[in-house]
Image (cartoon, rainbow, N blue to C red; front, side, top):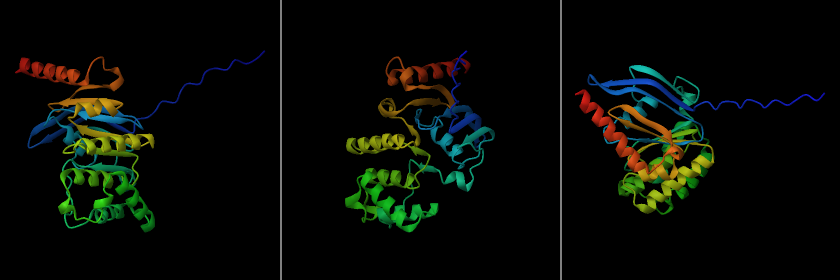
Length: 255
């Protein structure tokens, strides 16, 4: 008698990033309240919220720039941001501090040296990145002479110079004209196609709707929505506004 083949149980995909019960206080005030979320490998994850909602504070906790008082955080399978783990992470803050008297190429070279990339390989990566972010004509211009949009693009280039497994972008489209926004969105999609996980903070809902797999909304330091973009039954704008209004009504009732 033939032995029947039993279907194999699919191996669960472990999150590349997970936050559980994160709480953060600043100046005696609770900024983050029980923040929990998961990001799967290869996802583009949009983190939404009004100004002051807790987006940047959450990102700083993930990256070890702030220490949460309570909760558990794991990234790339580790609960510690070791030197090895950091080598697989990219980060572009909203307001990147740039050395104004370095050229674009010099700035990328300076950042690349933090990752012990061999000299020839580093120069090849710089050539590739300058082309990808459309700054070839300005590669030898001082950053002091870059426009805001150009600074955003060179900041994005430095965030991925180490070929990270996960990259964090804080308001990557801020200050960009339509051409610059399209370029950054295409670059994010290109990163996904290469297997890179992208986590970005934004308040530009159309960008999330067009390129993200998953999103979460934070308001008053609490996660008020966490779902796949494909699960939306209407526009993200309508869903976002309804979620914000319900949260504010609930706080008003408590007050």
